Length: 225
Image 1 (cartoon, rainbow, N blue to C red):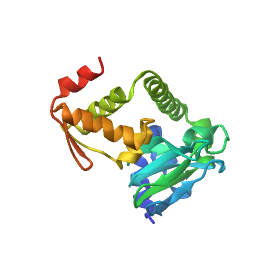
Image 2: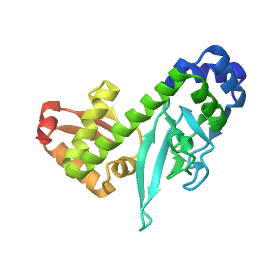
Image 3: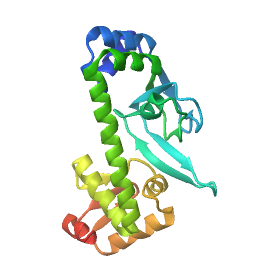
C-alpha cells in the first residue's frame, strides 16, 4: 500500500487533478486507496455500482464486454497513466463492462464523493474533467467509425502505424497478446494472424513474437488507400 506522500505524488500525475491546489489534493489522498492486483484479477464486474474510478499506476487492464455468444470484446486497453470508470461514476450508472488485469500491477481507487465535491467547488477542475471526457468520447466515435468502414487489413495497418507513432519506434511491441489486440480491433485471432502473415509476405513488416518491425511505412500507409 502506498504511503500518504506516495499517494499524493501519484495523484499529482493525474492530468485531471492539475487544476487542484495542494489542500484539495490532500483531501483526495485521505480517501484514495492503493490496490495491488494479480494477473487475471477482476477489478470490477459489469453491473457493479460505480462508486469510484481507477488510475492505473503499473500493469495493464482490459475493459471487456461479453457478446451474446460468450465471446469477449475488448473495449479498451488501459495503460499506466490512464484512468477508467469515471464517466459512468459521474452519472450514477453501474459499470457497463468488466475490468480484468492482464498482469500484476497496481492502481489507485478514488471514491466518487471526493470527485463530486471537487466538481461543485472548483470550476477549473470541472472544465478539465469535461475536456477529458469529451476527448474520450471523440476517440470512441472515431474508433466506431473506423471499425464500421474499414476492412481487416486496414484496421491492422492503422493500428500498427498508430502504435509506431505512440511508441516512437519502427519496431512496435504489442502491449498485449495477439488475441487481445485482435479483439480490440474487432477481429478474430485467426484473422489478425492472417493479416500479419500477408503483410509479412509483402515485405512490409517482420514479426517476431509480440515485436513487429515496420519495414516499409509508406507501403503500409498505401494499404489504407
